[in-house]
Image 1 (cartoon, each protein chain N blue to C red):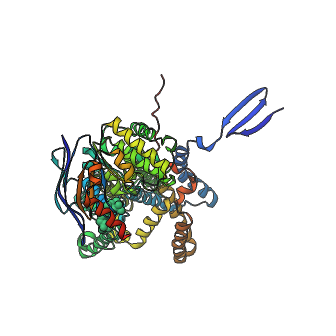
Image 2 (image 1 turned 30 degrees about the horizontal axis):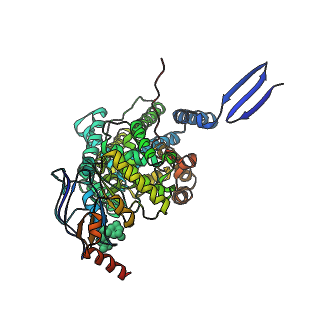
Image 3 (image 1 turned 90 degrees about the vertical axis):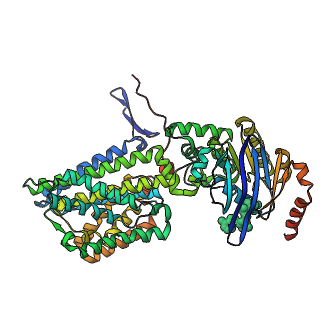
Length: 359
Length: 244
Ligand SMILES: Nc1ncnc2c1ncn2[C@@H]1O[C@H](COP(=O)(O)OP(=O)(O)OP(=O)(O)O)[C@@H](O)[C@H]1O
Ligand SMILES: [Mg+2]
């Protein structure tokens, strides 16, 4: 008689042709990050496949939405990481995005530099400006830090109009080389989609690695109580400068991608309060548990936004912001907290004994 | 050898002179009690030495080096460590990580996270906190918090340990344990200690020398029995009591 039972997180099938089989099904042992990553990877293909076979048309808008979700992920990943390491919430992340976009567009259009070089330049400019501004993470906090960072995009916005001969005001800088131009629109779209996904993944892996290391622990200490951390030897000012500088560069990379994706870059389209609200709300909703949450939140919000906008226009967008506000209260730990409800220990790196391969 | 020298140290908060022209020396290996009525400037003095506040006047010398303008993280690396009167820990971290970050901060340049964790366990063990290793600091009782403060301060391998009221808020049995463990670490770790406490009876038994502060000034400095007989000290304490 075959007996099937689940016990202590195991699925046991006994007496199947006289043999006993056991599998661990306890979710704790699943390689969840890998499963999630694979899902992330195949999702665009599934969306494409299902949509084309169901409606007979290519979901261009939907695929572009996913590209945008990846760009938003780059921003929210960097913002989330930055707020852990500096203990401050930056209200001007889109300033750094625009900085990267302008750098890439100007260098490409005016000097014919190829995207590989403009990538390095965009990161460098973002990082250098970030470094130049980084003392604000040491001398200001609270509302002063918020105001300071809030001003940055406004200044750049005005500059884009003031020197419209250089920045092209709201039309932007046209004629930027696209990263991909195969002649096949759908193929191009997929190439952009997977490039943006790759960039977001690289950024995520870097941040994740750092957060799990001893530097992650020190960042956590700075985030929670800077003065206390310094009292025990943690060089908080140094950590804040390094984090602010690097994340500023990473945010500029998002702008670089946009310039070479859209074939132009118009700062005023990105330097808006809407953009700021989208980045800030998404990053906050992600929760501070783990950096993956940022990508999950970006996808949820961007897709929700697209659905609401395409079905109910401006009303839908208004509804989106209200939904996000409600979620802020309902999910104080963010989307990640929903998944990791009871495992608070993992807010900070757990210490594991390094495993050695046994030969 | 002189470990710490404080020269005419002054700190003002608005109109209040919390520390007023205080000078003293502490030799290596000494255990010194620091007493005084409420608001006499004891905590402020610890804050000045650890770098939490910048003084308004004169110098602090540690191991023959002027540290008056060093930031707190550098002082911690030189071997100055302290506890907080109102326990101040990272609440969302476990007890283990609270100690581990202090180790990484002060002497962990070449250490991995796992090594710092192993070190941290050693210090938790000394204070009998190992079983609370994975408890979030915000879920610890006051007694455990006081011990965690001591564990974290000791884990930095300090030369000078400043203890700001290790017994406040504890019941007599707990306070006894704390005293015993402080005496033990002093023997085992070759420490120099400045120890602030309100329970004079216990403190006087454990220390060899007492500094007495009153209204920001240092009014007495000497062995316990000598200091307690000084008219200024009796005056300060009786004066303080009369106010209450
Ligand atoms: N950050 C601050 N701002 C303003 N005044 C302060 C500050 N810190 C301390 N003071 C004042 O300085 C004086 C000395 O305070 P301090 O905390 O050093 O005293 P204490 O001897 O530690 O007292 P207690 O025994 O109550 O701990 C008090 O009058 C206090 O009000
Ligand atoms: Mg005090």
